[in-house]
Structure formats: structure tokens, C-alpha cells
Length: 328
Image 1 (cartoon, rainbow, N blue to C red):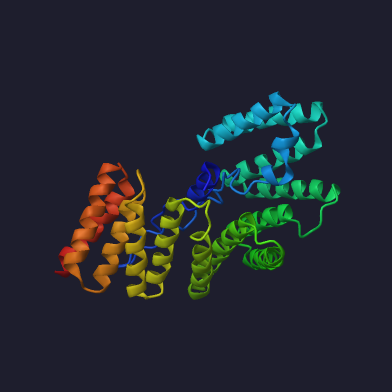
Image 2: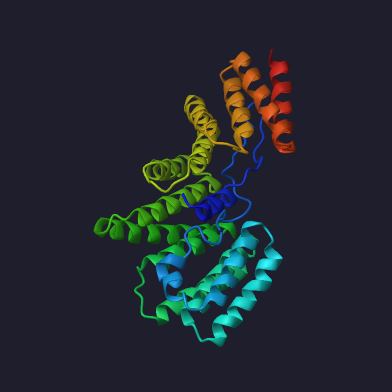
């Protein structure tokens, strides 16, 4: 997985201590406060390569460098600087009348708005990008428009417009299925897996956890078979699937997925969410009354939280250990 896509997924699936009930306060990394993003937000599935900007803009070095600096600022979470520089890039593109460059700058602006949870602004910008692409004569089932439509559906989800979001995801998956039948390209499969993951999270928020779990599992099965997917993303997906299993009472399955997430996560240098996964596994053991295992795993999760200076993980682990003590 490219660094851009990893950045997108990590922002999208930021850790959050969401639902806490006795012996079941798993730490769902999937519960997204932000949107897509980790989306590159900007550029996980950005239309950059799809519209061929890099190939066609080689002569416009100044514009390219400005855009690259914008992306760098976004990756550093320096959003104000990124937004200011994007307006500079837009003026540069307009001055040389580079329509493709203008479209791309709008796309980055839209993703930045998503990153900042400015959903209405992001929606307006994505619609503008779509209109510009339509004016260039592309078909409605063009992968570039499907990509944007998926983000618009995600925005609807974040704005609690669940019916609109569902219609959008259904449309995207239908079009992607037809495209992949004609051309089983890994880029299209990756986009399909991303849409399925987002769709699953929509169902989770609508209390349709079993249906959401189905889509999240399908997404994971696709992702793990793609060459350009980072192991860190698969770790997060495994943890999130385990979280949903825990929520619906499938404790044995949750233990299985948490252990898989931990085993894979231990092979990755500097995996920041690993402590949360140990706490999740410990709480699952608590539900099975396997208190020795629970104490050991929650204790190790606490240690990782301390080492990572992550107060959320540390506090959750301490609560877990306190509950184990009360159960003993």
C-alpha cells in the first residue's frame, strides 16, 4: 500500500473509545470520528493518477511543486497551511488555463475539507469536480466518478443521511462489480473493498451489525489478496471485525480476530494501536471468564499504552484490570 493510501486509511479508522459496557468495552479502531481519511485523505484513491495529471503536467513544474507541498502539509496535519497553498495552486492553474489542474486542485480541496470534517464544503467541492468531469464527456460509470460518489455517500453517512448513503454505496458497488467483470484491475478491486468497508460501517451505525460485519469481512478478504495493501491496514481491519463480533456476542470469533490482529501487528514496527488490541482481547477473555488470560493481556496492553504515551489505552487497560480484580 502506498504511503498516501496508508495515510488515508489510518485517518479514516482512528482509534476511539466508543462504547463502554461492563466487560465489553472493546476499543473499536473502526469507529470514525473523522471521515475518510485517513482518507489522504487527500489522496488515498485520489483521481490524480486516474485523470493523468502527473503525466500531462510535467511542463508546469511550479504548479506540480505547489500541489505536492499542499499534500505534504496535509500529511503533517498542517491543514491551515495546506488550505492557503491550495488557493495559490488554484490561481496558478487558472492563470495557465490548465483545466485538468483546476479539477485536481478542487479534488484535493474536497478531500481536505473531509479531513477537517467540513462535510458541506466537501460535498460542494466533490460535486464541482464531478460536474467538471462530466463536462469533459466522461460516462457516469467512469471509475473516477464512482470514486467521488463513494466519498459523497460517506459524507451522507457522516451527516446521518443514512438512506442517501445506502443508495450511494449500492450504486457504487453495482457499477464496480460490472467494471471488475470486464477488467479485474487491482485498483478497481481496492476501491471496491474500500466501499464495502465504508458500507459495513454504515450498517454498524444503523444497528445492523450482522449485515455490517458481512461487508467488513468481504472487504478484508479482498484487501488481504491485493499486493499493494499495507499490513498495518489489515491489522486495523482485523481488530475492527473483532470489535463487531464482540458487539453482537460472538465472543469466540472476536477472540479469533483480535489474536490475528495482534499476531500480525507484532510483525510491524511502531504499530501504535497494538495496545488497544490487547485490551480488546483481554475484555473478550473476561466474557469467557478466562481471568488469568484477561489479566495478562490487559496488563500488556497497559504497558504498551504507557510506552506509547497513549492515555486512552492506558486508562482503558486500568479499567479492565480493575474489573478483573472485582470478578476474581
